[in-house]
Amino acid sequence: MINFNTFLTVFVSVFVAELGDKTQIATFFFASTKTGAGLSVFLGSAAALVCSSGLAVAGGSLVGRYVNPAVLNGAAGMGFIIIGLMILINRG
Image 1 (cartoon, rainbow, N blue to C red):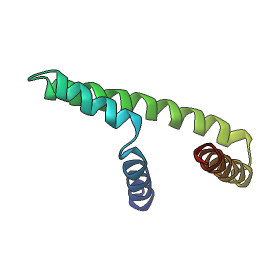
Image 2 (cartoon, one colour):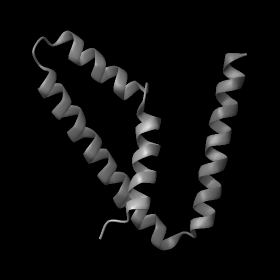
Image 3 (cartoon, rainbow, N blue to C red):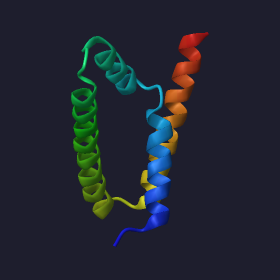
Image 4 (cartoon, helix red, strand yellow):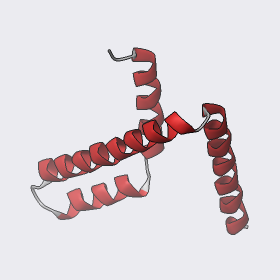
């Protein structure tokens, strides 16, 4: 059964994270350069996102069986902090 709270949290997180990223920009350019191919571009990009999300869920489920969730949360948090610092340093 689907947990609506989990669904909504993941939907909002992925939706916001994908706004303006390189995947969306690539999709934008494919749609703008391929006349009349809007549906094909949409279906292709949607299928790619479904497949990559499927791999992430499978990998996360596998890792989650063997690694404590608190360790995963800490590692993810540290990863985001490090990436943020690297972006700030490279802009300066």
